[in-house]
Image (cartoon, rainbow, N blue to C red):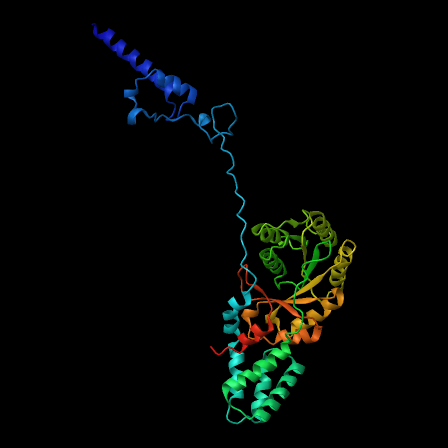
Length: 399
């Protein structure tokens, strides 16, 4: 072959291969799927690297993700993953809750009990000792009147019985404290009504844990096989309705709420009761917005919520949620709320975080209504019916 012809042949071959490569591989990108498959059918599988796996990359405009994908272009659109509904939880049985949580109450209140028992077990109980006993009781938020009453009773019994035996002293103190807490009060929740749902309103100042209390109480009622419906009438705190709804979902309880922030809470409460009647539930619980007891306009609005609900159904319970750590300040709150909405029962939260168990006596004395529930922890089932005997036993636990 002539040398010039050879050179021309080589040059044409280079141009031909370069042109073919340009169409097959542009900048190291992948060909469109249909073109790539067409190209591969013309190639020997043995020529492909890694046992027939095509490692060619397509141009950016042909690669999924670099442009907005459209149907029909060979791009598989991923569907949103299916969000599974959380499984419905089974709340712990109500019976025995306070006994189960007693250790927490013992831990937070044993200083109170030990102090009293130590003072009453001294060889000589003079006026100075009685003054110390009185001081311990006042520091426990027992209140002035109940403190004087308890000290007078103990003084008389110690004088008459003349004993310093710690077991006997503890027995006397247990009896007198139990009498002050008053086990004769009816602490049952009204959770049934004739031919209609029982309606419970939950009220209190900001930050005491009303919404959480409603959620925990819903769990208690579900554990007792009650059909419950929640009403999110706290329409001013953005997360309140969602928070309440989440509590409900966990135990399969529906929630009536408004999608409009700042909606009329009375309307939401009324709608909740209306739906409860329609669905024939056992209990409708209404969560209300926190409000300061010294804001008359907010308190008037709370009264309006109750009046509007009563156009549909009687309100069977008004539960006032109080933070036990606030001590005597809680008494002022309780008094004002009771005047506006006729409180029927007290829920004491955070009782495990305070050594001031005497607040139970003080609140009952001032309001004339019983403590019905106490919160002893952050767990979803750390709400228990109040029991006077168990409570006093925990206050005076030796360990």
